[in-house]
Length: 159
Image 1: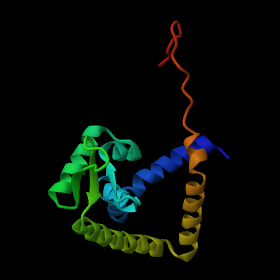
Image 2: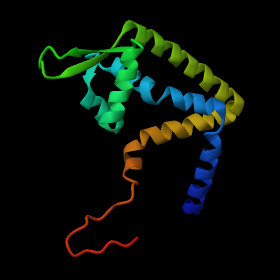
Image 3: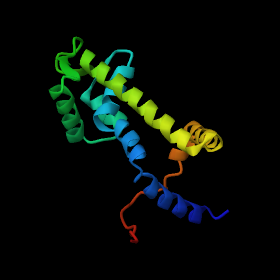
Image 4: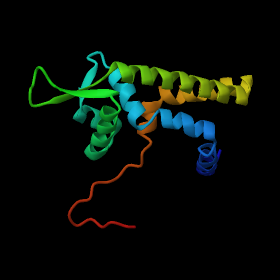
């Protein structure tokens, strides 16, 4: 199998795949504000500080601040002083935020069910099998990143 050609084909297909409105809607549900609401609601403590969110989503602090400001403006989340460390600020989901998140989860389930139905029973099962396999192998997938050699004094960089 030519894995490089398959990778090129995959990227071409994913580009087309992301143009499907149903898929765009699903992706929107798993990014930004909704993803942070989901993250916060999944924590046993029910809250996290901005640094935890920044780390969990591998985003910059300004992006985290923008998301938290938007969630707070919509009354989906609120900031409060950390009772254990008054210098820290914790963020938690409000009841309104939980309700909004649940509505969006149900919407995502409807969208995904429509997508799987569009695929048909055999392709839907195969799609789910592949997705499950990729998720189970995610640690190995992360190790597929190109290895970068450290730049040391006297080494040359080729572009």
